[in-house]
Amino acid sequence: MMKRFQYAFVAFVASLIASTSFVAAQSTPAANQPPPATAKPALAPPNVGPSVAISPDFVVGAEDVLGILFWREAEMSGDVTVRPDGRITLPLLGDIHAEGMKPDALRDEIQKAAAKYLTEPNVTVVVRTINSRKVFITGAVPTPGSFPLTGPRTVMQMLSMAGGLTEFADSENIQILRGSKAFKFNYKDVSKGKKLEQNILLLPGDTIVVPE
Image (cartoon, rainbow, N blue to C red; front, side):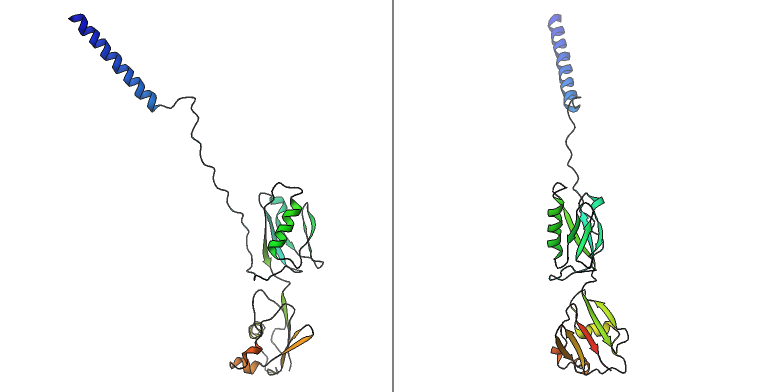
């Protein structure tokens, strides 16, 4: 009877030790078990910096300032000014024609040229300053000169940017010169809401002449 009790006690202790070891093994990771993989952080988009709003029909012109940004290639990125010959110069790539191109088309051209030197180049082109699209105002206005045409502007809006008309201006015989064409503009009528078809949208290169 005593021996059977001893055998039962030994079996109980062995079972208890075995169960304790199993629980410890489940709660403690193996020494050679690799740590769980962690997701790589998403790449932040490039910081394009300041830019100006452009219309869908905008094309690059001489004197415009562009930001050329290469993803992960800081030494090739920077701001450039379109030269009078219509070209820009980029590190490693040299001269690239830019005048007359939309920014997206210029981006594609730069990426094509950069593919000779870089693996899968990623380029962004932003417009920093528009200097090529100008309207000229001359004559009897407080501040005659050239004015940037950064968006849709009417004759009345552009005259307002020049400070309006002087007291000696002949407001009824203003002209807008566009190449070989000339458009009449009667400031008095338009300011009174009459003949508003004269208040045309201006195009780059237009000249507003305000006689005295």
